Image 1 (cartoon, rainbow, N blue to C red):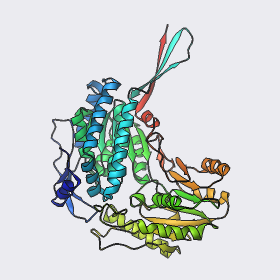
Image 2 (tube, rainbow, N blue to C red; image 1 turned 120 degrees about the vertical axis):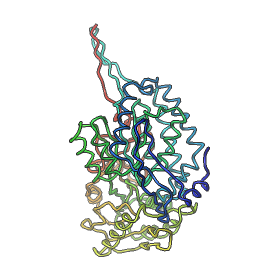
Image 3 (cartoon, rainbow, N blue to C red; image 1 turned 180 degrees about the vertical axis):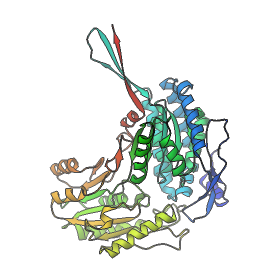
Image 4 (cartoon, rainbow, N blue to C red; image 1 turned 45 degrees about the horizontal axis):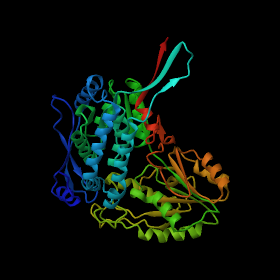
Amino acid sequence: MSMTTAQVFELASNQQLWAGHLIDTTVPVSETTLPNYSPIDNTCIGSIANGSQQDVNAAVTAARDAFEHGEWRRMSPAERKAIMQRWCQLMHEHMDELAALDCVDAGKPITECLNTDLPATIETFEWYAETADKVFGKVAPTGADALGLVVQEPIGVVGAVLPWNFPAQMYAWKVAPALITGNSVIVKPAELTSLSAYRLTQLAYEAGVPKAALQLVCGLGEEVGAALGQHMDVDMVSFTGSTEVGRLFLQYSAQSNLKEVVLECGGKSPQIVFADAIINEQTIGHILSAAFWNMSENCSCGSRLLVHSSQKEALLTLLKKGLQSWKVGHPYDPEVAIGPMIEKAHFEKVISHLNTAKTEGARLIAGGRIHDELGSGWYIEPTVFDNVSPDMTLFKEEVFGPLLAVTSFETEEEAIQLANQSNYGLAASFYTQNIHRAFRVASAIKAGTVSINGFSEGDITTPFGGYKQSGFGGRDNGLEALSQYTQTKTIWLVN
């Protein structure tokens, strides 16, 4: 039975929310637990299972057996599609509950969870369900003496290691394409945000997904995540998170079975406003959303605003005015746009960046206030710094918090050079009315997604991932995501 948002919030207040292992095994699983604290007020809302190497071993054993001998891989694509569509229907029925779980677990505003995250989660599953019986192999153009078939087969046992910033949506990005192609999937949710992954997996079983084909192992990244990365019988790992941890998964692969690894990591995305850009209410909305959506805890966050000097003063005035509607407060409030940082350590990191920006000479022009009167106290106003030079820390390092760095430029060439002056290359956006410039700049920027005259990550039809230290090995979303969960095989029949 689905719970309302109010019922979920009540369970959180009574410390009764739980996320545990979902492993298809008769072997006893770890009984140790971790307290689960909400970033909203730093109170305990329940607990999660604390997984071990043994728990991962049990899940991998079940996943391997299911892949080699179980029913999921051997179902027709249409059968897998029907089950996933039933799962989607259950998600619709439980949308309020799932949104509330992400709200209390991650401190995300409830309006954002209800109107953006959960609809996007369900859309992802619906879209990949439809691909099941619509994506085909190929017949090679051979002579009469042979028949060449090019087929895609599921890769095997997949580890999906999730971030904490979009719990339900990132679950969908990994699980939907991996599962619909016939793999056995083991999900490791972030220890800070495991609740929606647990509930989504339960609903999968209710829809008809075999338990061994989709399992959940909760716990710490250095235990469960590392164990998946190092396991000799895991065929691939898809990871979204920090570049630092992404490097570890490449090491795990090299040290184990050379498993496939797909990484979607950090970003320091530029937004560019050219001299001919039209600055109106819509433009300001896009710039602020790119910079501050999801408390800026977003890999594609447009945290560097590069502005032609002729536009800067007028733009800054409009940005300050636009920020008045970005309410900071308790995420249960439907009017709130900015909730807390995910945890104290991350909050302190963001504050350190804020103080460093001041020390290095950046000019604070908006925000900067810490709302320590709210709940946990980990609430930071959307903050804008001007006069940020390329040698400053705020220009170079990913903050993952609501600090926007403004830098002026004079020429198109300088804007492109500044945009590409980063170790990252996940996303970028720019504003111009010159169609020739639009093509030149979009081609010149080194980023996986470039949006023109608006902020966007694309949609489910378009691949998402990065250049340089923002990505490795593949893409989420689009038909392109299917390829990372499959192996390409040539079958050559001699007549």
